Image (cartoon, rainbow, N blue to C red; front, side, top):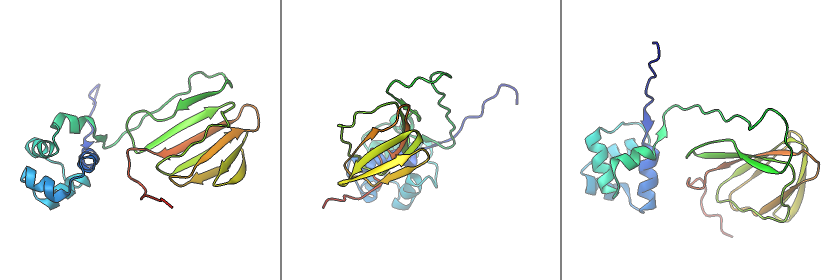
Length: 189
């Protein structure tokens, strides 16, 4: 016990999968290059197997990177991160505050105050808008939506939208699937 802090294992599978997909390689090609079996590589990518240092180096070589780079891009197996507000007093000048730090599958931001209603957004993946305080008007797919405190709006990836605060001191929380995640298929029309 005492001051000993237990090292949490990392989930290297997502980093391996991201790198493999970025290179547009199949598991079979990585298997051929690394000398490791396709089922074992699949287990690594799905975090059902933890590769030894030697196996991770073989995978890294096959992916034209290093084991250190893969570990740096890995997700912690268990993580808790608290992001505290900047100050205890309320400051309602327009601002954006990230609610999540680091390289994760979800991004979350809090928008406080007014917002540039003329700016249009289109994100690759799905997102959820939650009105914590105040009210907003959102234009999406040619329709206008009015949301008040406690309301949410879900947008699938690729939907063009813009929004504006309609009440002073409005706070909106936006949670989105990270851009580096391939969460949706191409929804081209």
